[in-house]
Image (cartoon, rainbow, N blue to C red; front, side):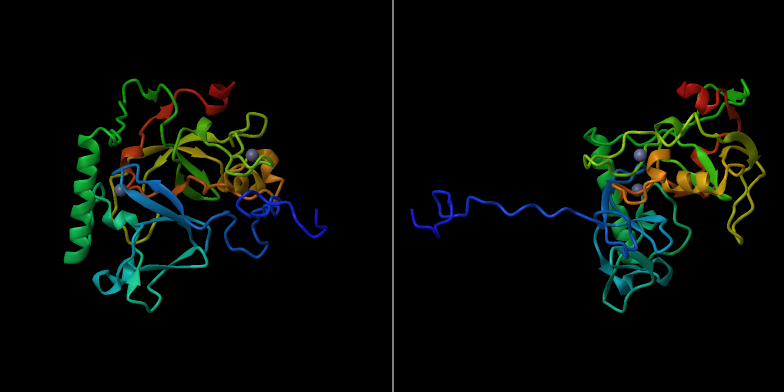
Length: 286
Ligand SMILES: [Zn+2]
Ligand SMILES: [Zn+2]
C-alpha cells in the first residue's frame, strides 16, 4: 500500500471524518439561544409564529413572513438584526410584523389597511381550517366561579409578579421547566419551582392596566403569584426560567426562550381569576 494513500470509501470519499464542531454561544452574543428564531404556533389561533428576543431579552412573536413596509403602520414595523427583533423598519421595502396585530383571536383597535386586513382574514381562514380538521383546538375561556370563593387548583396560565412586572406564564406553575441545556445537550427537566427555596405567595390584587394611557377597567380583583418579597437573585432566576442549579451555571446556554409574556389585562383577560387557588403550588408539588 502506498504510504500516502488515505483510507477511503468505495466512492472515493475519505473514511476519516472531521470532528463535529460544537455549537457554542459567543460570550458577546446578545442572545443566549443557540439559534435565532424559535418556531411555534399561536396558542389562540394555531397559526405559525417565530419567537425572537428583543434587545431587552423579552421575546416577541413575529409573523413568519416579511410584509411590504408601506402596507404596515409605523407602530407595527419590526426588523431583525443579529437575531434580535427591533421596533421600526430598517429602511428596506420589507419588514416584520408582530403576530398579535394579525391574530384573528385578538381584536385590533387601530386601522390596519387593506393588505394587513387581507392577511388577518387569511389567518382567520387558516384557523377555521385547522379547527375543522381537528388539528387545532382553540383554548376555552377559563371561567372563575366565585362560589366557592377559591379555585380548586392553580390556574392553567397563572399571572406571576417578578421584579414588580406582571407576566403571564404559558403553563401551570408546577410545570414551568428550566430552559437551560444540559451537558447531554437536552433541555433540563427540572422545574423552576423549588420547594426548598422560598416560594411566592398568592395574593388578590386589582387587575388594573399597568401601562399609562390605557382605558380604565372596572376594579376587578385578580389572583397573582407574587414573588416581590423574594431576594433579587431569586427573582432573576424565575424571570430567566432556570432551575437553582442552572441559575448558578452561567455557561449553560438556553435551549429555548422563557415562556413569560408581559401581562396585559386587556388582551389576557381570559386568564384573570377573581379568586385565590385552593392550594399553594409548593404544597401541590410535595
Ligand atoms: Zn394567533
Ligand atoms: Zn436546569
